[in-house]
Length: 226
Image (cartoon, rainbow, N blue to C red):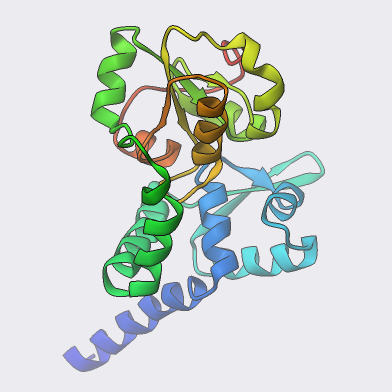
């Protein structure tokens, strides 16, 4: 095998991953699977796609070795093949924001312009949690919270927030987080909380970034209520 043929073979395999990721629905599925494993039906419901279409995209990701499966009774559950898969999707988004003006404008208009206060960094949140200064609010769906969450966080899905405000303390600032830096769930939660008189900010990243940084996480529903 010549040096050129070896390089070509390697590039062919690399291109398989690039081809598998060249689809907005598949990037969304990777974002969803970064929250925890789940069956195709749950992924379809969350992404707004049909089960058949979701299965098609999952097969493409599976063929590229980006996702793995596990049988759970009658269901097949999907999960990311490794933490590096989400890191790759993060790198793609970061590159797009740096190189494609439309992406940067979207981020600026939907996130930064809506923040009257700076988002909370991971380091600052960890420090303030240890001091007992804040309430950490997870506004993702309950199944995502159960699969993994910031240790000590309270679970109130965004759809339930308005009717559960009475259970939140007003003496402490509330820091909301969701799926990632471009997820709008936490931003909408902060807007709701501020309108009701709470001091609230959002975490600049989401749960996958917190976990990837090696910061304290927990699984299950224990301690997740208000």
